[in-house]
Amino acid sequence: MFHAAVQRVSGRRCVAHFLRAHDERMRQYAAINVIAIGKAASSMVRGALDICDQRVRHALLITKDGHVDPELYNDRRVEVVESAHPVPDTRSLAAGLRLLKWVADLAPGELPLFLISGGASSLVEHLRAGVDLAALTELNRRASTEAWPIERLNAARRQLSAIKGGALSTELRRPAVALFISDVPNDDPAVIGSGLLGPAARDSSVGGQTRVPQDHVERHVIARLEDAMHGAAAVASAHGWSVEQATQRFDANVLVIAQRFADELRAGAHRALVWGGESVVTLPANPGRGGRNQHLALLLARHLAADNRVCALAAGTDGTDGTSGDAGALIDGETWRAVERAGFDGDAALEQADSGTVLEETGALVHTGPTGTNVGDLLLGLRYDPRP
Image (cartoon, rainbow, N blue to C red; front, side, top):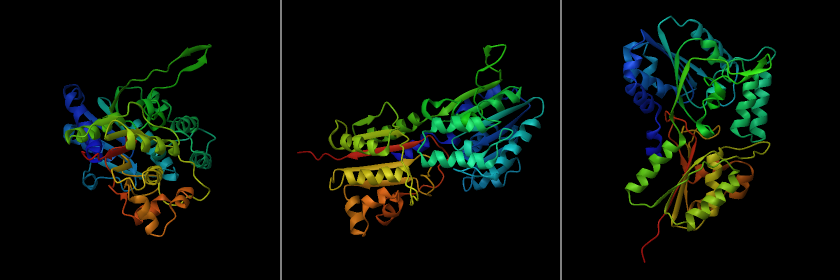
């Protein structure tokens, strides 16, 4: 189910599908210049090259360390910039300068094709006058410690940035196309990547009149969390399971989500559950190893202990969970007892946000490597009800 979900929202697949459908219009331009930013940027560039190939004059790829398709290193048209994530650093600022120069060097008659996915907020930045890296670092530290929702964090990031919140869009002053893989609620381009290629905010500073600064960017969201959920649900249904696909994304505290999911999985009308969203975990002063999905999985293991009818998977569609190199974890009714047999205190691990350590010892961690997409987190569950 998880594999099908990720494939449904693959950056390569979704970009190629869009460009294939709009190929005739793309051919009106003398050349295409690609700028891809985010954790799915490498996969998205592959999709553009699959369809546009020789019409791509240059591609600037800004992504997270270890997220570059090796084949792209051998393509002379592709310039690779590996930057910082999830906490921005000096490389993020350097990537911001490179982005601005790329925009300034665009030739007449060439189409800028922007490919934006989650992670862009950290990977590329150009700060407002008077703002320094220390202020940006402190913002990210506070957001992590206080478990800010992504909307609040992105809004704060836009206040520090000279290119986000639509600022870059208004600077283009030429037609451009922007394709988005969304990892945010409501799939709003003004929020994805802190609005790196979103529309400009309303401006009420001219004569007391509210106006919207004009830009010429055509925006399309080509992959969403719901698309991934459909992919997972389709696999379960094809195998004969009755499926409940959640109609709303979860965004509550991880403790609340774990309880609700466990209750529904044990006693609900459907034997397969497909949920998606982003949980909130309040971290201790010195957290251990893991991420929100591993934390959620360990909580579920405690709730579902000794129930041998059920299993559940909590994982990030991008293949990463927090600062760990794992996507999440797959648990069942035996996992909690396996933690205890391995000599660990599961409750202490939850208090210390050290779920990754104990889940590794039980073989529950899910490792995919970079998946080529990033639409949020999936929570999948199955319940086997033996016939009487």
